[in-house]
Image (cartoon, rainbow, N blue to C red; front, top):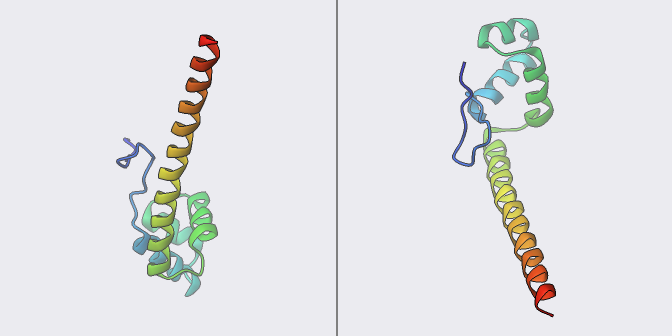
Length: 97
């Protein structure tokens, strides 16, 4: 089985935020966790991880969370690149003197 990867190389879910929240809402409505997991082909660990991340959210909030996570990832990458550039420049300056 192949794992889907997004544009940034990070593992992406085969379920959208809307689908995940829909599954969680079914659970809140009284459906048994084991039945939901079997029906959707997910593990109970995945279900509880989703519940920890998306529990009590609406779809618009989940989409905003995803946008913020993507932005945070890009900013972290920029900071890492900047730190590498600074280190290289310090090494270069240190060798010339």
